[in-house]
Structure formats: C-alpha cells, structure tokens
Image (tube, rainbow, N blue to C red; front, side, top):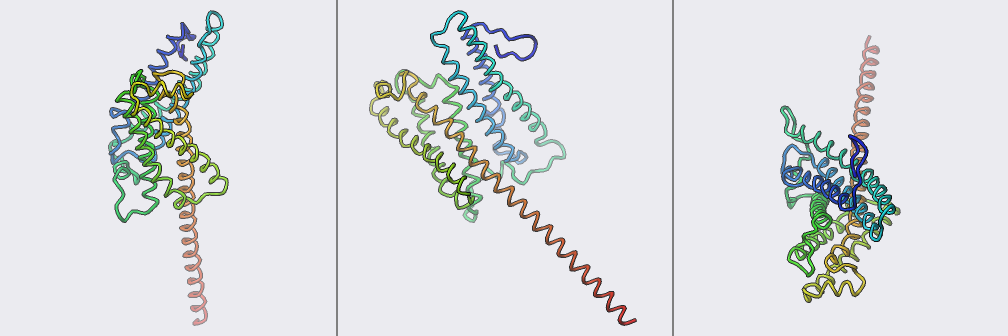
Length: 321
C-alpha cells in the first residue's frame, strides 16, 4: 500500500497497511540504534551538528508517523467501499508524510556516514567525542547549555521511539516496562529543568521568541506534573490503576492507557526541541557572522593604517629630496 515505484500500490486491507507501516518504522529506528547512528556517539570524526540534525529529523519523522497512526485509527467502523476509499487516502498520506521523507533522511545519513573517518578526513571542531564529555568546572554556561541540549535530545529520542513503536511495553496491568518509561520520563524532566534554567541567560530572546518558548514550556511542565500523579496512581494500584485512568477520562483503552496519555506530550516536546534548536542555531550563526565582520573590520583597519604609513613615508622622502 505504500509502494512508490514498480507499479501502482496494492492496498489490501487495514492489517496489510499496518504491517507495511510497522516495517518502515522499524527500519527508521534501526537507522538510529547502536548498529547505526547510535554507534557514533563517541566518534571523533562525527560532527555534533550533523548528529543533532539527524536526531531531530528522526524525531520529526516519528511525529509524522504518529499522525499517520492517529489517522489510521479513524478506520474503525468502516467497511466495504468506504474502507477501501479510506485505505487509499491513508496510504497516500503515509507515503507523503512518512515514507518519502524517510527515504530522503536515510539517503542523507548514508551519504554522511560514508564520509566519516574516510582516508584524509579531518576531525571536526565539534566532534561527538568532545560533545559527549561532561562539561569541566571551567566550562561556560553556553557550553553547559549545548551539552544539556544534546543529552535532552538523545533522551527524548529514545523515549519517543519506545512509546510510539514498541507496543509490547504496554500490558493490561501496569508493567515493569511501563515503570521504565516513567523513569525515562523523570530523567527527561531532570535534564529539561537544568537546561531551561540556563537557556535564557545564554540565548537572549526577543519578546515574540520568549512568548513562544514560554507557552511551550508551560504545556511541558503541566505534563510533567500530571505524569507524577499518574505514576503515583499506577504504583499504588498496579492492577487497577489503568482502569482508574480510563474511568477519569484520561484514556479510552485500559491496556494502552499510559500510551494514550503520553502521546500528546511527545508531539508537544518535539515542538519544544525544534524551537530550542532553532533559537540556539540562530544565535551561533549570529555570533559567527559578527566574528567574521569583526575580522573584516580589523583587516580593513590594518590596511588603512599601512596605506597611511606608506603615504607618510613617501611625503617625508619627498620633503628630504
């Protein structure tokens, strides 16, 4: 149903669509596991900026995958021609939103990885080996912000993948695997708290930028607060906790109650990460531009001074003659 080459798509039924979608999502995640990009976390030749960009693309692809999954859920109750028409539409959406961007992402990753560590390659100034090192006592606030942002991205990337693509985590009753998700959720909050406390001082914001960031942060903090309450309910009532969530309107399916609650948080936090990355990247580019302008002015000043000195020397020689 997601075929783009070799003939028209063959839609089959909804189960067939989900099977193909799951295969693609698994391929995306394998690309970022330890056997793929995850293996370059400590590489002296892999650029930090490239790693962050690929990780953010992975997060965005999971956002689009989440939207396709949500759209596919609307097939409930459809049959016959209505179901076939729906399959045609949702398959088209999956190709445009997920499959095509996934192909481009995989090609970009493969092209860059092929160049990493090649003969004659030079270690980048922002290598992952250096980026993953814990900041020293003498590190600046900006260096600490960059380290926290990278770790926040990696932590969220892992949590999002498990929640979105690993249905085996979710059982009828509160499981150890779900407890592990809440531990990762708490770790995410810890890193976020440290980062957001340092970010404004290291990255001056306009009033509009501050407004956008504040709005996202308020939503994220609300999710973190709700998460602590839900975790307490599930730990106190492992066998009935999910039923309580359904009864309180926080979910509609007992087995996937935790997943239903946390999925909106995932897309919200993905937006926050993109905003933080954009603001920080703009700041770095601005600093680089200012540094380049300063060097240009210094070179021009030296040139003018040299010309003035040469002119003065020439005048003195003429006077002596």
